[in-house]
Image 1 (tube, rainbow, N blue to C red):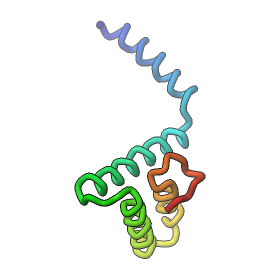
Image 2 (image 1 turned 180 degrees about the vertical axis):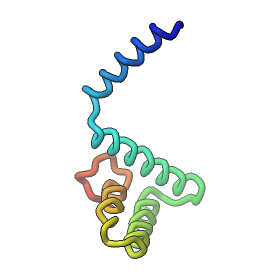
Image 3 (image 1 turned 90 degrees about the vertical axis):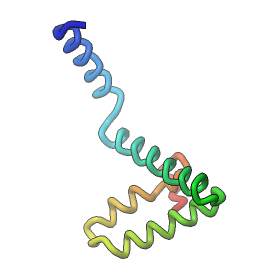
Amino acid sequence: MNTPQMSIHFFGFRQYLEHSFTVSTFSNLLIDFYMQELLNQLTGKAGLTEEQAQQSVAIMKEFVLSKVPPMFSAVVEGFFADGGAGGHEDGLV
């Protein structure tokens, strides 16, 4: 593939992404992915049940919130809001 075709293809893909995802949506997808990865490692490597893994994440959230400046608490809350349940509205953790 030569450079002009590549840039046209990339530009089309970029437009698709801009129309398909907002920054917030992309950010939420990443958070869901990383939270699920954390839960998978807690269940797989530490041998915890799904419930124990979610309780562990809740403890981690409390710990991190106690260590960060108040201005970062919304970021921490946002990261831990879903607890790996697949939806940030659930607020399981």
